Image 1 (spheres, rainbow, N blue to C red):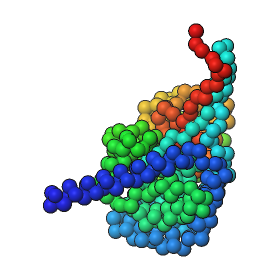
Image 2: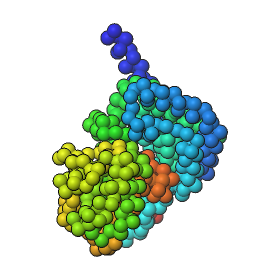
Image 3: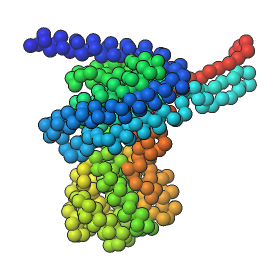
Image 4: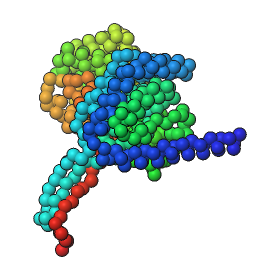
Length: 426
C-alpha cells in the first residue's frame, strides 16, 4: 500500500513537472506575442463559451450534485452554480478583458541622465502564474484571460467541487488559443482532484513565479503557510460599513442592503455595521429593521439588541467573516471610534463610510489602510470588473507589488531599457 502511494505521489509530481515545464516554455513565447493575437484568442474563447453553454451547464449540474453530496453551504452552492445568465457574464468578461489596452511593453516612465543614458521602465509579464481556487467555475475564465492578456502562462487548479464546469470552460479557452495560433500550454488546467497537485504547485519554484489563491480562509491560509513562491492573496473579507451621523437615510438604506444581501457569499459583502450613536434611533433602527425583514440575522451590541428582531452579539462576532445572511452591528461615538474598531478587527480588504460630511469621509479615507475604501457606495463594488479591469484574478491585501483587485496590469512586472552611445562610466 505504501509503495502504491509512493508511486501515485511520484506520478503527480511528474505530471506537475510536465505542466510546469510546458508553462515556462509557453510563457517565453507569450512574452512577445502581439496584442492582436491575444485579443483574437480571448474573443475566440468568448464565442466558444457561448456556443458551448448547454454543455457547460450540463457539466455544472454534475458539480452541483457533487456539492450537494458533500453538504456544501447555500452560499458555496451559489458560488458554484452556473446558468445562462452567469455564462453570459463569463462571455462579457472575456470580451471586456480582450478590449482592454495591452499592458505589455507600456512605458511606465522615461528619463535621460546627465551621462547621456536614456532610460525607460517598461511593463513585462511576470512569467508563469499558478491560480488555486475553490467553487467558482468562472474563475477558470477570468484567471486564464487576465494572465493571457498580461502575457503570462497560467496553471489553473480549480476546486474539486467545480471540476467538471472548469474543464468545460477550459476547453473553450483552448479553442481560443488554437484559433489565434498561440500555444495551448499558455492556459493549463490541472486534470486531477488530488490535493498533492496543490502541494506540488506551492513548491514549484523552478516553474511558477507567483501563486494566487482564491477561496476560503482554510485554502488561503494553507497557501500562505506552505508556498515557497510569492503569493498574492487576502485571507478574509471582514468588511465594515460606518454609518455616520451625517448620513443620508436613503443612501444608508440602499448601500447597506445591497452590501449585505445582493450576494452574501462574496468577499465584498459587509460583515459588520458601525452606527453613530446620534442616529441609532433613526437611520440605524431603520437599516437594521430592513435587514431583518430581508431575512438577515442581525447580531447587535447591548444597545442595538433592544431593537425588535436583533439578537445579542458576542465578542466572537467582531472580526468575523460570515459569508452568509448574518451581520454584526455596533454603536460607536464617532468616526474615530469606528476607525479604531476597524483597525482592530479588519482584514484590510474593504471598508465603507456613509456620510454627507466630506471631512468625515476624508478622515476615514486617510486613517484606514485597507486595500479598498468606499464612500456612499456598496462594498460589493470591490471587484475588478466593477473597477474597469474586465475581471480580477483576486483581491490582494498585502502591500508588496499588487494591492486591491488584481487585473491584467497588476500581473506585470517591469524592466529597465537603457540606451547609450558608446557611453562609459567615469
